[in-house]
Image (cartoon, rainbow, N blue to C red; front, side, top):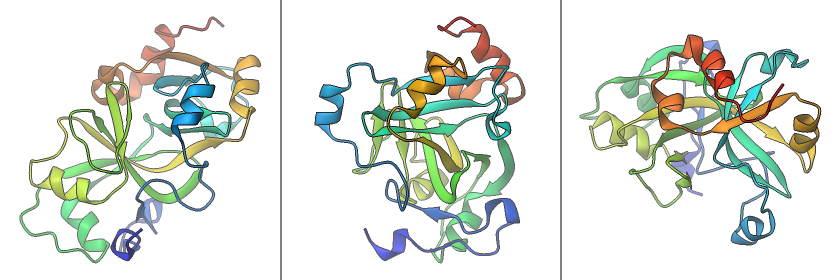
Amino acid sequence: MTSTRLRRLRSLPIAAAGLLIAVMLLGTAPPEHTDADTDTDAGSLAGQILIAAPTMGDPRFFHTVILLLRHDRNGAFGIVINRPIEQRTIKSLLEGSGEKAAAVEGSLLVFAGGPVQPELGFVLHSAEYHRPDTLAVGEVAMTADKEILRDIGRHQGPKKSLFALGYAGWGPGQLEDEIDHHDWFTTTADPKLIFDDDRGNLWDEAMARRTREL
């Protein structure tokens, strides 16, 4: 992992302070995913959307909608997609990390991706865009290399994208237990639901599509 991918962003508001653009996952993030995990975890929900039940007891996840990116015997990892924080220019994000931002334009709505390691940045995006470290899950993908920001700012990035800080993580068997206790419901990861639907109504829309009954 190169040092340029690990420089901290400076001069950001408190909600976005200490942003890192990680290659994939860092520190206490879930273990590396392997083909063996995919082969042995036939019940994986990776690529599905998790919807917090109305009875969710954890206030950090009240009415959250999460794209689940990994789910295997080692645990699970996902990004909250309905908690917008603020609008930031792509130039400010790149320059704040010490990078030159020549010929980039536009801005991104920054989301709170989850309570774990909120200093990490992730870009969810449409699957036609791909870099060496991109994690693809069906029609959606995730890239955590800041070069995707540069590509978006030069109109060479994915057609659809969502930038988030932090993630939601579960240890082995934890998500399964929470689903069994009806804390979460699932639905298909429709790109329209992830990128286009009104964020203010996203939980209601996702609940209407749930595949696990209350």
